[in-house]
Image 1 (cartoon, one colour):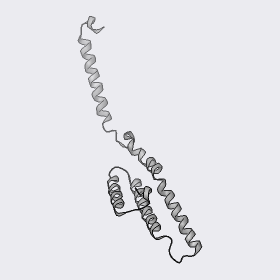
Image 2: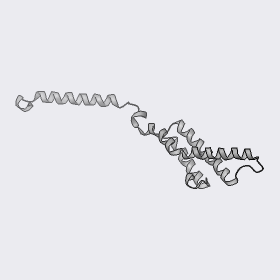
Image 3: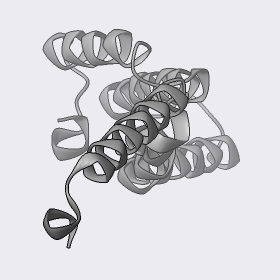
Image 4: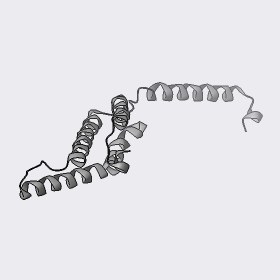
Length: 129
């Protein structure tokens, strides 16, 4: 929503903080830090767009603040590729899920296969073919 209008309204802030607070239960600390950094960038960008560079600033200082705003918007626009890169390890269950289930699962399969083989061995010869 922010990237569409470049306004960090109270409603947008509320929705963002809600999503940010829920994200910490699904993703690691690096995602939480990234989302907090983005929130600060949006606040700075919104304040800059509302009030502009500091009044009475020298031309060089004003240009510096404009360059900072452009860099800030570039970082915000990089959200989707960056967040995709950060989310991928959490979306692949085999990367983050412990393999506690694997040994009992394979043991049950082996035991079941042995039971089937034993039952087949008990059948008369003409049925085993």
